[in-house]
Image (cartoon, rainbow, N blue to C red; front, side, top):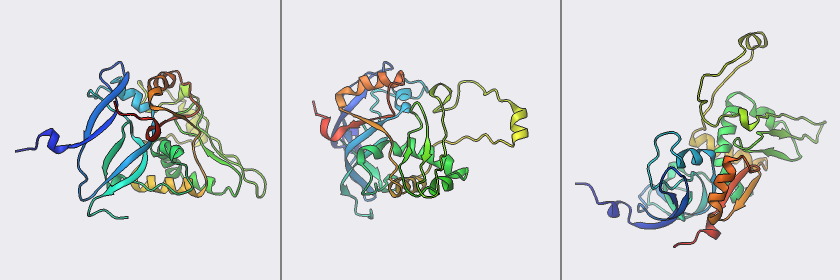
Length: 261
């Protein structure tokens, strides 16, 4: 016989959730499971707002269940580890150690949040297509990785050694799809053949690659441009996100501004 819900998730938690397809968020009491042998419990400090949160809040993919408490670009500090461990939009979480990455000491925690989704979604195809080696060729100067769901996606290297090398990938918001497009793409085949061009798709990355990406960002001082906001601003931020009125990622200051009802 299965356990009752209050026995499965006995630890009280608090966050903001939507009750329906309006997507409007409001304070919400929830619960988390106890820390298992291979789990890590952590206090959430920051959580990025991803455009996929908007799709989920409004059930645009048809698989949302309510109440819905979103948030997957989550950064925090570990408060408890299970006996077999080594090494969102709410106040704390419990996750299996396999799904935890370590943030380098020199990487700001608030700026690290968007890297956990937008960052790996950008890094993985660049690495797969062999473009990361171009980024690594830079030696000095600022390097910026602006998150993929912003108005412009740019990977830029300013090489201060023997001149300047700039690698830029720019995608206007109106032409960029964070998910599969609603209808088949119409492509000019002949120029693709003559130019030996390649079209590829990519969807995020695995945990090993995510840790690699975070370490790469720390090593090269790469962090996204962010706008840090308090928790009670989240609905305004969602409306601004719909209008693409953000440069370039919203990050919720959960640790300092989430207040229990």
